[in-house]
Image (cartoon, rainbow, N blue to C red; front, top):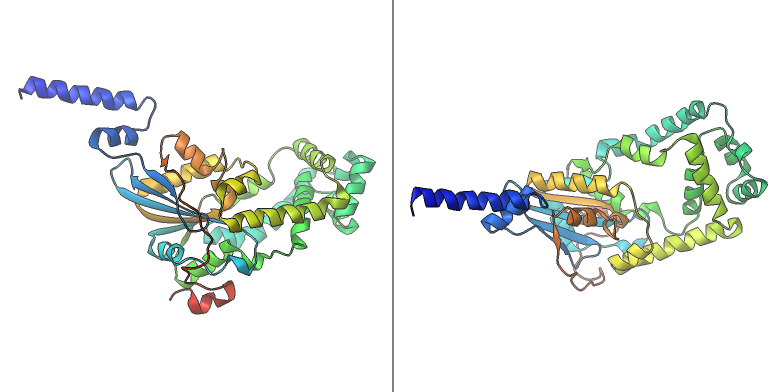
Length: 334
C-alpha cells in the first residue's frame, strides 16, 4: 500500500472516529474503531447486585460492582452471598454513599446545621403560617414539645421530623442495616471507604431551598396525608419497600420509590471510578439504581454502558458466607 493510500485510509478512520464523538463519547468511538464494545451492565443473580465491566476511555480494563442496600431491616437480610463478599474483599476500592470519615461526622454536622437553622429562620415561626387543619395534623403525628422546638427553625427541620417519626416505631431496625454491615466489614479488614457524595452535599439535599420553598413543601406534605393513618401508612409503605427489596426484583422496587435528584451526580462519580480502572465495589441505597431516572439510566443515556437482559433473579438463600450482623466478628473474614 502506498504512503498516500495509507494516509487516506488513516484520515478516513479518523473522520469516522471524530464523527462518532458528536453523539457518543470518545471511548465509545475508540471502542468501535479498535474492536472494543461499550461496557456491559449486568444484573447479577445475587440480590440487588449489578456489575459493569469493560474497557474505559484509556483502554484500561475495569469492573464496578454495585450492591444496592437498604438502611433498615431484620434477620432475613442475612447471611449474604459468598460472591458479594468475595467481590468486596477483592476490590481495589470501596465506595459508599458517604466516606467513612464523613459518616463519623454526620450526626455532629446535622446538629450544627439544625442549630444554624434557628438564626436562618430570622424569628419566623413555622406554625404561624399553617392553617388550623395543618396544625392539627402536626399534633397527631408529633408531640407538642417537638413541635414547639421545631417551629422556631427552618421548615426543613419539621419535614425531616415528619418523615423520621414513623421509622422510630417500625418493626424494621437500623441495627440490620446493610450499609452498617459493610462499614463494619471494611473497618474490620482495615479498608478505606470512599464516598459517592460529600457530607455537605448530602446535608444540602436535606435542607435545600429558601424558607418559603421549604414551607410550601411542608404544607403540600400535610395536605396530602391523613394524619390519623399517617404512621400506619408510612409503616406499611416501609414494609412493602422492604419486601420488594427482599424479593430481589428491581422493577418491583422501582414502582415503590421516587426519583432522586442526586442520581445524576452519582452517575458522574461512577464514571470517575470507571476511568480509574481496576475493580470498584459500591454499596448504596437500592432505590438509586432502579427506575427511569436511576444512576444506571443516566449512564446508559450517556452511552457509557449498555444493558444486557436481566438474568433470572433468585432468592438470596443458599450460597452464603457471612452471618448476621452480630456474627460479623466471627464470620466476616473467613
